[in-house]
Each structure stands twice: as C-alpha cells, then as structure tokens.
Figure 1 (tube, rainbow, N blue to C red):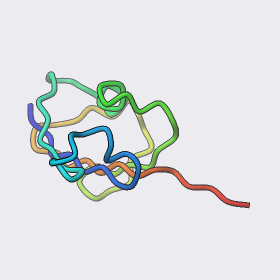
Figure 2 (cartoon, rainbow, N blue to C red):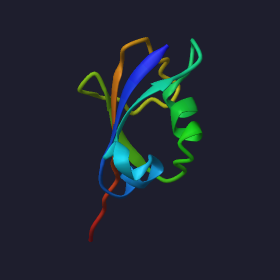
Figure 3 (cartoon, one colour):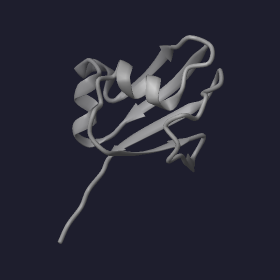
Length: 77
C-alpha cells in the first residue's frame, strides 16, 4: 500500500533534502502508525494525524492512500 507522508520541522531531516518533507511511501499491508515511526527511526514523542484527524493510537492500522502528517511534540514551562 502507498501512503502520503508529510514531516514538519526537525523531522523533515528523516527524508532526503530534495523531498522537502514530503514523500509517498510503500508499506506492507497491515502496517501500523508504530511501524511507520519505526521505519522512519522516529523514537521521540510526536503528534500525528491520519487524513487530517489527530491519531494518538500507534497501533492504528494504515490504509492505502492515507495521508499522514507528523509534527514534533513541543513542550514548555
């Protein structure tokens, strides 16, 4: 299956510079959000959406054509 991926801020470095933070990835059927994060070697807390809906569940199974956006988690005090 293919998903459209957009990475924001520092996460853009996970893709080649010329990609400008966007790519279409081929994933195995049944791949989850957690599988995607592992593939990208993203180990810290992030905020993400699937098809423009916030998705906190890393076990969510992705579907062909999904649009995934991943943002760095920010905190302050």
